[in-house]
Length: 590
Ligand code: G6P
Image (cartoon, rainbow, N blue to C red; front, side, top):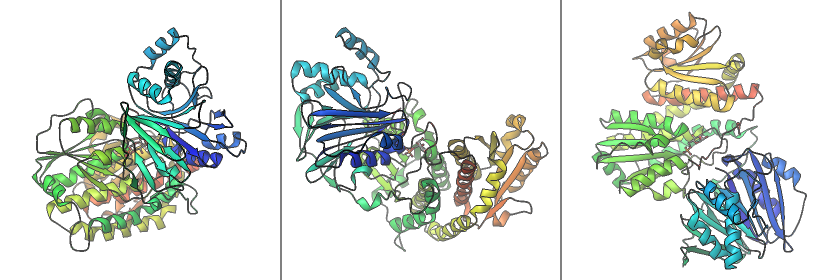
């Protein structure tokens, strides 16, 4: 994964690089570093810590000609100072920051060793710096050296590069995101627009195989030795709101933004009388004999609802985990529509799926929160979530937006408008939970010391259970499993001990009784059973209830309950809620 950033020209480098890096640390936060060139010398600083540690380590400075910085999610080599980026070539001709994985780095390392190179890190990145230097020593031309180097690299890379001999900012890109920001008297690049939006609203999205050079005055882009005319696009910079607005964490803020996000989504896709979806998309979905959802993590769990919505329209529908489907694709019929669901639009496993589909000429619909992201740009149809920036690693409001958008879309395909009426009650229900969140905090205080926990549901309540158990693992570091109610007695019940927390979701009249019976079986074996029910199905002794919402949308209050529960459990355990260990928000490596 990793986040990279660079700038050239008239800039406060310390502020731009460190503030920008902080905004990119959702991409990884194992270690951080920066390098800048000033008065012809390159100064390097890296730490085996987070961006805040780097900020403390970098003394104030002014001036500078060009700078690069990096926040790392370790793939090759432990997160120590030596393995932190920027990396430099043996003779320090080049300094680079890299996001991606060089698959053939071992063979390249051996080749470079034959050329006399000595390695100081365990990373795959170091070979890029040395290859650049090796080529540069022969060619005496940085761009030609980059082109030559790209020719031998296998895998993925977005790199920002400084050469000791000039004050330009060089770059190259393949299969990892990179975009350029065009300023006045300065130019920028980064893994996403967020660190650049305070400086510009004009961007160039780089495509695979492109490389080039930024000077303070211009951007020159090449592909295979030929200059290309870049496409400059404007972005609405207001969308990149990075303020906590008084909240202690982004996760809490983002959970509580969900009702507004849903409201906004309704406004974007329904004008009071009719749905505003592209009619070609609606026709394609109506004509489809199957709708296949591909996604990872939380987006996959949201897709499970997409499947249910489609099935209710009488369509065949399946959801697959992107990293699995990429290697074991089901052979689709010509009338299958593939829906790629991804908050970031940059998840590498899903990009692999999309490549496969593009090669086969099959239509894709991208559902993302990120306009201009790789998946969004390459899809046949695109729907945005309008959820606003999601900073916390845990996906919260984006899950809500995904499920609601899938519901609206299914309604439009089915020619109905009922979900829109349902949205008002959904928003009311979620607002009600926000007001009563201390009740969930009290439950978290009872369970946060547990090593294991279970979420149980049936039907769509099981889909909610899956997402909630993921949240409990990610944020609270509690080992959690989700099971359909009837399945527990076929094995997992052996794990139930005295006081094991089991959270049961009850929102479906069809299975409410059966599920309550399953939960009784567990409490008889000592489990602490906590039932979360819709008001219509509430019974005495239930731990939490929420105002009723239509049918499948019950997953949203249930998941909001689960988001709060993991949030408060993590709070009680004093864990780093927005940046849990080992994770990253945007997983841009396979
Ligand atoms: C990472 C994040 C998850 C997210 C998943 C898929 O694992 O930590 O929160 O659900 O990626 O991300 P996407 O951007 O494709 O929705």
